[in-house]
Amino acid sequence: MSVLPENQAPPSDSLATPSAPRAPAVVIASPVRVRDCLASMVWVKTAPEGQRHRPRPRFSFLAREPEYGDAFASLEGRKGVPLGLAVPWSAGDRFWDLYTARPPGSSRAEVAWRRGLPMLRHAPVKLAGPGGGYATTALYIYPHGLGLVLQVRLRGNLTLAETATAARDLRYDRQVLNGRSLPPDLLASSVLDAVGREVWGDETPLAGGGGEPFAVFTVVQATGADPKAAVEEGGEVHRFLDKVTGWYDRDRDPDPLESCRISSPRRDGHLLYGRRRSRCVWFPEHFDVPVPGEVRHSLSHYHRNLTCASLQTESLGQYACRADDDLRAPGYLSIPQRAYVRHVIGSIDRLNAGRPEDTYRSRSPARQLTDNGVIDSVERVRKYLERVL
Image (cartoon, rainbow, N blue to C red; front, side, top):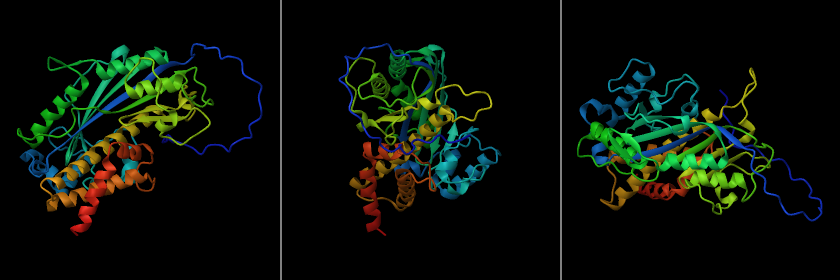
């Protein structure tokens, strides 16, 4: 499966020619109909440093690098590790190859600890997707915490306005978990807390996870969109992108297009749109169903890659912020924490730079790290580590 390029170099500017005064614009209903879209929400929680070193006995491999690498190697070889764990990648998923800069099929066990690779465990949550779609959940267990991803796929024949409403409903509608009706944030927090108690003990207060998730929304298939037409400032597509990244459907002026552009400027409609806690993938050149036998990029695979990148950035970033908090009280980091946070900072640096020879190439993680204050925390921790060498 080919990796979908997030951006390409824009064509050179052409000379503008004078034009006659324009007649008043006529508002025409948009021909765009969304046939298939994906929405993923990511929540992360981090274990306190004291508990991170003392998981329950059956999870003891989470506390030390050699044991974690051995457990990861067992998962790669499908020899099995108790507790229902698996490697985080699936068939056709190339994110972890690119993230670790390892060729497909090679072992990642020796870098699992240093790159902060999680183990996958299917979350005990089953949800019915709205509008004839379906929902899946996945739980990720790191040496330093947990991550939960809720993904919903919607299929139909929706206008952009109807799609924005469906996205808003997904974000705020209650779901039933063990007989309790909960909004998504509380549902995620309940799942993460329950697994946290299983892994690190009943008295472990995991941090984070109960607030706003980091979200990725992707239009996978649509008709009526002109792939050659750039997104117009304040136009219908711009308003749609702003709505699905802001989880609203009312009429309002969208945020400025350039302030929300994650991908590099282009003259066509290709755009990765982002806010502090969300992204929307609008790549109309890939909306059509491919002709049989034609090689096409897969937006569903791109969505999964971007979701995994967001999960990894969120989890590592939250741990770096936790280490920054520990520097204020008690004012120092333990020797094991210093060793582990060095690896975390190295992974964050690679994601921030986005060089394809080192890790997954995307502008999104760098923006995510900056917008959420992680870079400031990383620099404070880095300066501390330099002092204690």
